Length: 139
Image (cartoon, helix red, strand yellow):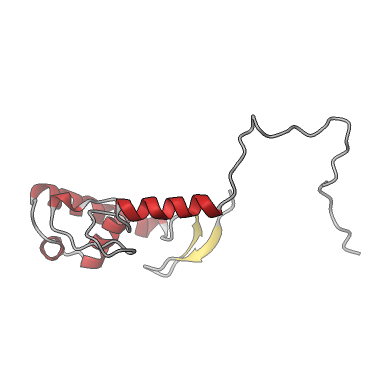
């Protein structure tokens, strides 16, 4: 897998992107913050996002991001997350269960169905392959 170079949105350093949009150092920092938030919420059930943020010195937006990413659920404390589609209250993620099902069904209708390998027809052995890889002459 080739990593493309990106600038970290947190610190500005260039890093090899491998699926997460933060450099390794900022990912480590974020993980430490997440563990602090998780422990605090477990030890102080019922606190709201503001109280958690204030107690451990973390921005409220970071806690909301953990909730949106599905890393935290608001069962342990009072959250203010709303479904991005219908506005209903949710514990984590971006959409409520009902809206996720609607969006999932919509995607299934517009996306072509994949055929399983058992259904796929093998290419006849006697035909030459049309698409071959080659190198263009630079002259």
